[in-house]
Length: 422
Image 1 (tube, rainbow, N blue to C red):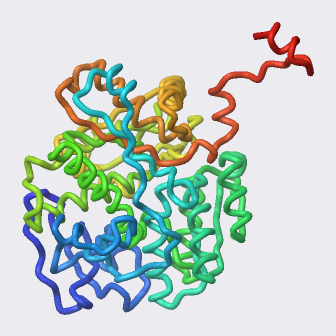
Image 2 (spheres, helix red, strand yellow; image 1 turned 90 degrees about the vertical axis):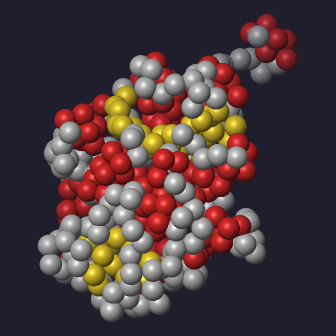
């Protein structure tokens, strides 16, 4: 099936179950969703997407009984009616009047996914992915991670009563994330290599049937992440009576870019959104880990793997984004773009957000850094309404937060001494 915005709503093939099936984005081969464990196409090894023969509209979402239900309020657009849940989703869409005025935009809102249960957007994918794992009858879950995936998988695996294995690049994961995975009971393996090496290993383990892979290569995980886009659109419709012109988001493995684009395609297919209403998707990467930006700038159909990547934004320190075949069409079909920013620009954006009372880890701030750069270049114009996605909480990387903030000031242990210092 084409990944174009103009693609028609699909008809269910013979191997669909309750109107749900898997389909290869490369060759179009279809598969039953829960009959076997698979991550890529049996025929061509292409990426898979979950398909539905009955797609809901905004009216269907509005009819949900509990508006605070989060991800599972959108069950009509998910592969199962319920998941392994810790009340994920329904995250704030913050107003930022100071930044909005500084950037001279019609409207700017921050969708803060750091307010999920484990402090990142990954929870949205895990509530669906772990539920599918239970449906498939597997008992060991695994992922490679720059940190947030491991924390979410450990928490949701624990909630679901399943063994969890995480592979992390040694010395390259923020302390807050390792602590989460550890406390939630994951078995942590520190690999002498980068994230992409970890992913290579965990894919091989999954291929040998040793564990169920829950990185974003898994198509079911991205279904939960679609709900970020649905919440953003509903929030803008409620406050501005229109959807945003542009959504700016950090890019690591490009799962969110792919997921948001899929959400928008499905809304178009359902007749809930016109193609010219779909927000432009803008991917932001750190300069030291920017293979998606390179592909967009060069007009390439594929991403060239970067073997050496480095940035203080550890959550997006990825050189081989596995979802690029889904994300590149998403950026291009929506009229978006991709841009890289320096670590210094990321830290400055982290301070800007903190000045609005919003605490995020460095990778999250990449979206605001990219928006500032695009605004300065005139690519984003003053009449635009923009949403920036921030993906993880400040306390995910307390060392980076401390380095970006003010130094403590030593004072005497008496009031007079404190007043004199002030």
